[in-house]
Structure formats: C-alpha cells, structure tokens
Amino acid sequence: MNKIWLARYTKLLAAVTFLLIIAGGLVTSTQSGLSVPDWPLSYGKLMPPMVGGIRYEHTHRMIASLVGLMTLILALWLGFRERRVWMRWLGITAFGAVVVQGILGGLTVLYLLPAPISIFHACLAQTFFALVVSVAFFTSGEFDQEAVPFPKVPGSCPGKPNEPGTFGNGTVAIEPVPAVPGTVDPDLKAPLFMMLTLLYLQLILGATLRHTSNPGIVISHIAGGFFVLMSSIVILLRILHGYEEEKQLVYPGIALGISTLVQVSLGLGAFIYISLPETIQPPAGKIFFVTAHQTLGALLLAICVLL
Image (cartoon, rainbow, N blue to C red; front, side, top):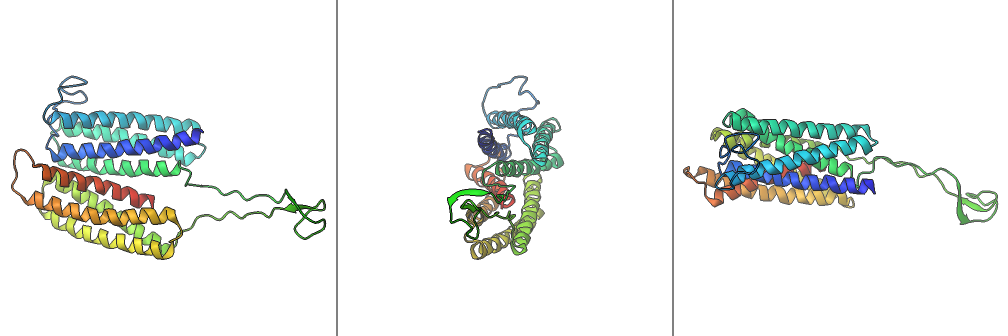
C-alpha cells in the first residue's frame, strides 16, 4: 500500500510541477517578472492584492512554494521508506534542485531580471520537471528493477510418479524462470540520446531568446527545431517497426511524434508574434503561443527522458 501511495504522490508532484512551468511561462510572457519588487514576500505580505501582473507573479510563487514543500516530503518519504539507495539520492537531488531553483527565482527579482540567472532559472525548471517525471516512473508498477527466478520446488500440480519433470511423490517440478533484464537495441538508444541532446540545446536557445530578445538566436533555434523533428520521426519509426508489441514504448513514442509536430506549429506562431512590433501590453495571441511553445518543450523533454 505504501508503494501505491508513493507512486500516486510522485505523479501528483509531476502534475503540480507542470502547472508551475505554465505559471512561470505566463510571468515572462506577460512581462510580469518585476511586478512584485521584493522577495521572498510580496510587497511585504504573504498575500498582496491580486491585480495586474501581481496575480501572475504571486501565483507563480505560491505554486513554487507548494512544489518545494511537496519535494521535501518526497525526499523524506524516499529517505525513510525506499530501499534502493540510488532512489534515495534521487530524492535528495530533487530537493536540492528545487532549493536552488527557488534561490534563482529570488535573485531574478532582487537583481532586476539579469539574463544569465533568468536563463539558468528557465533551464533548471524543465530539468527538474524531467527529474520528477523520472522519479514518478521509477516508483510506478511499470518499473520492475528485479526479476527473481523461481526456485525448483515441488508444485501443487499432480503428476505421475517417476515421470520426467516430477518428484517421486508425483508432484510437478516448477522449472526456474530466468531473469531477463530489459534491453533496448542500440539503434533506438542512439537517436533517443541524440534527441535528448538536441532538446536541451533547444531549451538553452529558447530561454536565451526569451530573456535577451537576441534576433541572431532565432535562426539557430529554428534550425534546431528541424533536427528535433527529424529525430522524433526516426525514433517513432524505429519503435513502430521494432517494438510494436512494447506498449510502454509505443505510446510514449506516438506522444513524442505528435507533440513534436504541435511544437513546430506553436513555434511558428510564436515566431510570427515575436516578429511583430513591441507593445506595452503583449497581445493574447503572443502570450498563448509563446507560453504554450515553452510548456510543450518541457513536456517533450520529459517524454524523451521517459523513453
């Protein structure tokens, strides 16, 4: 029962973290990053008036606080209940990452949105999300770390005395079942690692573009998107032609392909809106496309890590 609740809790944490990424994207898209000038309080209060850009920034802070608290609980839960040492360290790593992320968020406010810190903050957010998704998978029933073979013992099935495969009393001997570790062909691993590398480079480029508005980065980001699309097609085709019976690969593979196509479309929409003249208040279309493009990028990274 404890394992079941731990698996449910990690999935809930992953969902709340995804909401946090959306909230963080809205803060940047609506230019609300400095609507609250102090940190960790907001105008010296735990709950300031939720007006204007404050509602985006303070909502982001509240969800971030919730994620931090939930990650602390996860680290303690894994530390006291998890037998796998590497999983306990994974919980500690997740908590360390969320603490660093919170400090970076505060520094972006106190130092008036410095580009290097803002970029690091954006990249660590998606890295943390992928880490939480990994923990959710490792605590799920789908992840079977060990396969213990059955010993050769008398079974309950009756058999004929002295018959091959039976004991003298006539009970059937259960043959040991070998433990076969899950293996994936290198032809699938290579494009997965390639796409993971490309996605992370895209994350860095996209975060840099968001926080510096450097037009020279746009070309690199668009070119990177093309290579990501090609990688997703290669991965999907190899899964469908070599692992069509492995549903735990087929479903994420299809999700990866569809998400990549949608991501390209959102990227085109974001590019069009970014190319328009700057206004004091960003239009709703720009807020949607840019935020959705960033959020789906985080989901793509997590799917790739899961595969």
